[in-house]
View 1 (cartoon, rainbow over the protein chains, first blue to last red):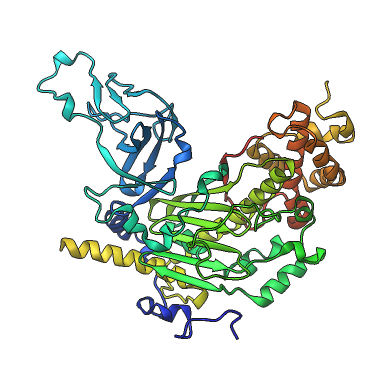
View 2: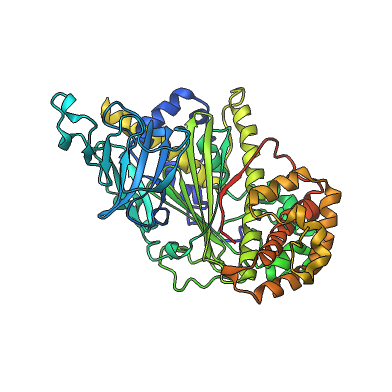
Length: 418
Length: 110
């Protein structure tokens, strides 16, 4: 008997018939050629989140972002008129415009104008070319037509998105759709206490998306993170989510909560009791005020978290305890990507709140390290290709959907050009 | 050498040089460089004093902690860091994590 009711079709997967229930292939994750198709069809066409507005506190604040999957490196800057993005390239002879020390590394800072390190061409924050060294030496140089090359850029709920298409086919808002935009009003802007983590993963970007798209693995892979009594109970129970939702290329899973603070002390680690915190966050929930309708849309009670997986490579995970995470998966080749995880809390007002945040953040890393290493093991074996069909259960519906969404975008793009 | 911690926590002074580290990267590296016996000794000494340490720190302005108090707070962060190897892993590294890394590039101060 399922613990939570399933849709009338009998399963979450069959509720979305376009997904099918057949075994799946991961050819899309082990093929250099398929990765090139994804770059053209997805990373150069979809809206991609590159950061938050808090990273640009005042006019002149900027950061750079290398987006290899779109063959791009951009400059994102706060101007008087809002946030803008440009290709980070000098119009003179193509030098990377903003970088410090190592041009392969991203950078951030504050400036009044951008000056090329090579020949000193200058651009204002809106990208206009304002100074050319010895401009009388040039032939037919029209400064007004030689500003920085803009990148489509828009902001939703403080998240900065860019789009590398010549003309995006959808506005950011239409692309996100109501399941995501209903999160408007959630206080992302107040949660500025940030722990950021990054690593290079030797696996296809979709395999790590898959890892965080299902919690079927949690009682097994993470068993040893908890006292034995808790983990054996968790393993016996298995995992079921009370709510799944798919809308366009985006997807959501909500989980039911675990009230660790009501549990027997044998089920909880001593450090969790001491810090009143753990994987699910500080035990004393932050009061974030009334939640917008997009949070916990399945009205799960108890409710633990919502994991919103935004196509293609961005996750917003909202915890009932009053904090949130983001994940980004930036492909660098068919079998490598850079993973970035960010943990956001309200600024701690005292030592106990800060200690609870430290515990939640350190626990996040312990789990993340376990998740990361299984991916390399999966990638290695998938690439042997001796076995090429795999089984997904109903709790893995979102893994199924990601690969279908990717296939649909690739097919639609290639179809439109045929 | 001058004392690193507030006088009330002189009993933890012996651990301060190793474990009063301001960044997660330093604390994580110290964990990987330590033996389980080292970390158990630190854990056993600091855990019984943690409640008093938090109470002591609560009496100070959180956004302007004096150096000795900040050192004490960093010692509590290290206590959290070593609790994983001590309470669950019984080895410095998370088992089965091979060459996995997850590097902190930003964290709140203090």
